[in-house]
Each structure stands twice: as structure tokens, then as C-alpha cells.
Length: 250
Image 1 (cartoon, rainbow, N blue to C red):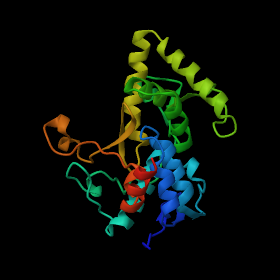
Image 2 (image 1 turned 135 degrees about the vertical axis):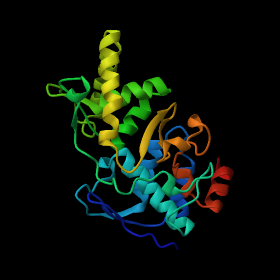
Image 3 (image 1 turned 180 degrees about the horizontal axis):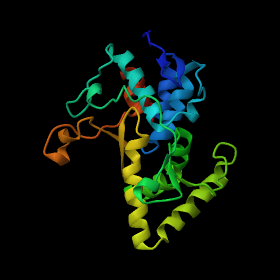
Image 4 (image 1 turned 180 degrees about the vertical axis):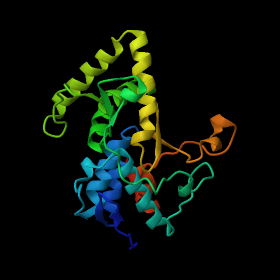
């Protein structure tokens, strides 16, 4: 059995337990494209106790949930600064001094008066993932969830997930119907606002959802070589025996 240090931040105080073989087989059986749903299932199985200010892992931000997976991987690996695919280590990507999710930021300073930008929770992201694919759809959905107006009335995504998904689809259509110049202004404000709500990771969007960028962006391949964006898939937490059994069962 591995020893897992408590997952602790200003908002989170969670005791994690090791996956059983049964847990691992359930995770192996989940489709690869359902990364956030797999993260939800992983957290349901490893969080033995959660007593922080935000106790439900469904309400943790996308960034906090990725951090939980990385924390677990550190325990499995026996060292917190785990090595990652692409040649980097965890500290090439993690922003430990920025662990507290900033509150909503007014985008008027960036030319989008009346709009604020905030966080996306893991449970919101799971619903986005269930309905959207492709980078353009992910970006529009991310904008729709993170950007708010004071007059906006959105359903509760946990109590009424179907209504929330319908609301999201309508808001995306509203964004797509904006005049091009208005969308230019709003998109620029959205991009300028993202660093103001950043914590734990510098996230960007790919055709399969969120990826973590290196802390020093000059190291990215796009900038001339070095470290690529990375994911922290739940499948990496599954032991080799359970992985082999999962393939046999499949």
C-alpha cells in the first residue's frame, strides 16, 4: 500500500486512499475521450474524506482536480516531482504559489464592459465534455461558462444538468451570432482575463479539452523547442496488473 499525503490548499483538505484493483478496472473501462468524467470517477474512489472549505470534488476547479491526479501520481512514483512524457517534470508545469482560485475579474479594463471572467468547476467541465468536441467547440464552451454578465440567469448545473446543457448550447449560439467586431473585442478580453483567474496551472484548450502548458512558455515547442503541453490522464494512476487485466476483460 502506498502512503498518500493529504491534499491541502487554502480551499481543500482531503485525505486520499489508494485505488483498489476493482477501482482501477472501472477506470480502465472508461473511454479515453471522457477525461473529465474519468477524473470525477477517480476522485469519487480515492477521496476518503474531504473537510476543506470546498469539500465536494465536483465543485473543485478544473485546475484543482488535475492537481489531485498529479498529487496521487507523486505518491505512486514515490517522489512529488514526477517525470512526465515529453522530458519535463512536475515543477516545469505547476504554479504552487498560485493555489487559490481568484474570484471573478471585471473585463471592463479590457474593453468588455458588463462582463466578468471566472472559474470552471470540474462538474461543469464534465458536462461540456459530454456535449462538445473539437478545439473550436471547447473554446466557445469555455467562454460561455467563464464569461458572465450581471443579468445572466443560468440553471444550477448540479441540480438540473440537462437544463444547464441546454442553456450552454443557447449561449454558444448567442456568441456565434455576435457581429465579428464585437466577438473580436470579447475574445480579446477573454484571453486577457484568463491569466487573472489562473491558478496551479497555465491551461490552454486542445481538441480534447484542457492541457497544461509549461511554466516558462519559452520552452514550448511552438516557441522553438523544449517542453510540450501535457495532460494528467487518470489512466496513469492505474497499476500495471490492473491495466493488463483491463485489457484482457475488454
